[in-house]
Length: 259
Image (tube, helix red, strand yellow):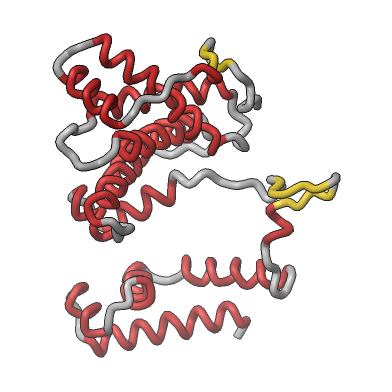
């Protein structure tokens, strides 16, 4: 993919203009008032921003012209939705929009299919995340993102995990004079094949648990809740929680250790 070529989609990238921040704000106000020429000048004046963003995806094997066009769509969405009253630079708002549009394009063309509703949830979660970063000046927690969307933490985490693009173990990460290092070379292997076998056995043991046992283990060890809190949430006594938890762990241990 030729990301270093001078012309992309008929645009001479060597001649791209760059607008000052005050010029952007003035044009944004005019564009919001319906001035089509101001909107066009904004697009042209921010194409260098689009170009810099798509450089991040240079290792995806995608055509540079296609990504540039998709990035321009994200730029135009940013222009149409940016609030000039915010004390935020336009580029700070536009970059996540452009990245989000490119990532959505890559996801939609990914051989691993994810449902439209889950992709939409993930897309909205990323938008909320970027907004909260600007408001809170820190990385928001999954709970904060979920609260903004009116969803549960689990729904948000599941949606974001589902859109992570799978990485091939044969993907090259570094090459120097023909000595290529691949992803598989970077993965630690503590005990060779035994490590893989242990993981498979653990998955099988977990799958064999009853729904309530799975729920208790999830609440206890994934969410860090006490047995009392788990008991209150699922409506049983703490003694029952303790008994079910110990029984589930005992069966998992027996299956993975071959007892």
